[in-house]
Length: 277
Image 1: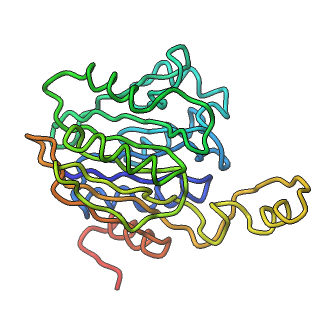
Image 2: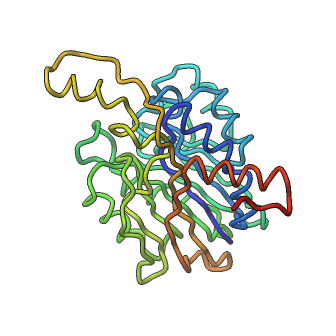
């Protein structure tokens, strides 16, 4: 089976390129499952019920979140009621949301999706290693394909998690830094790994925000509104090929689609048989 994980969606520009590119990418790349990190999808911070439904309508099968999960209070009922969205599993037990989701891929494979929050340079949170052990112990034995989004700042945290879970899950892919890393690989026991798949949003920015606003605050300490930028929009993520019978990853490759390519993909999806040169 083939899984695409799309990194942190930043605001309306990130959502727009997903809407334009994802339906065609599912066809072109023969994708069986799409997981999207949506924690920055509402004006750069948090997610709303409407955006959750918008991402699913575009082709996402499950939404992972991170440290901005509760920035929009209106998402709380969705986190409690919906089955295709997960909180970080190392959040307190009483916090809103489910620890993991089980979704069915297009090839009928059952896939478990887990989100975890790192500890280095992040808000105080429970141990992600203990949390993932707890969740893995709960999963039915017939679920072989397990995906982990590790939302963390430090590459050391991410490397430790990847090595800790090697052979126990299909993929450990990182989010949060908004910068795609060139360290994708398959670990010895069959787990795909990458420190960060990058953000989906405007790259003519500072981590998706207007450059002048961030620079002004950095230089003067004067507070400004970190508005979402608009230009050089890209969809970034990684595609993992997985043996559905064993859960072991066979290949991983980075994916980057700019808006021009997204429009080509959308055109080809709307007019089958035609390709834009």
